Image (cartoon, rainbow, N blue to C red; front, side, top):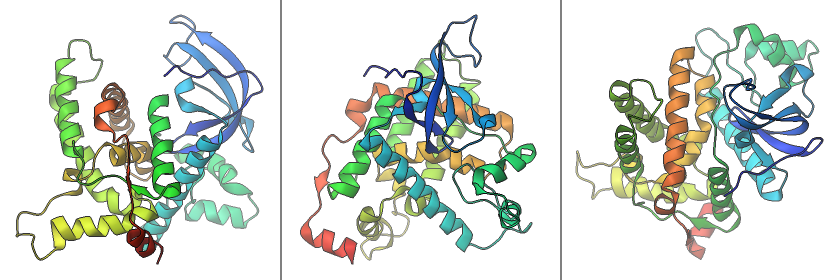
Length: 318
């Protein structure tokens, strides 16, 4: 799929962290190795985010941009709903020991930012401006356009067409991550990743662990929760499951839910204590994982989701 192009004054959608925002293209430049401002080459766009201060205007590559289409607007809404659900889950766990909280663009702000809003500060973005000095490292991922399309198709299949990913998937998340590790190892001579022999196993294990922990709380659409309960009963909690034979979710789910997790990582990093160096390493390895998913997408992603039965639909809506 060719990379879309954008023009000056065009209204677009733009990734910033885990969410998508409305923006307007102010300038267009084609960078080479001598003129680049960000270390990347090719077309870049200087955008202004709608409703934001000009201090947030920035240069972005086309990989972070989307055309203003109905499907992309639906993806924007879906990502916002996922973050709001995650924020509610975090809030229900109670305040941290420090009594504060973390914030990200478009998300719920912590105690200090909330207090500023009560004193008359309008909106999360202005409160965030006040917090610039204490801002944590931001994980900026380069999600390929073809994977963004898959995310939209995934959202439509589940939420609009009442379809489900067939489970267990083949290959599973565990198998995909192991294939990715082997793929990177074969590319070591041309890869720009830092210390893959040392870091790659740790990062792969960390992604698998986070997937297992995040799936039930942040990666599922409401329509999938009945299926998730059935899977847990069949492979973890049911009377036919022998002790020690339980399966992790990463051994059942596949590329569709792995991709959902990967695009949610910036939100996770924003609420973590990761240092800038670790965030940079994670960014490089996840962006390389995106390359692998694009290269193998025909084999990894399910082409046609299965139709949910009428009985399932009735249960999921009850």
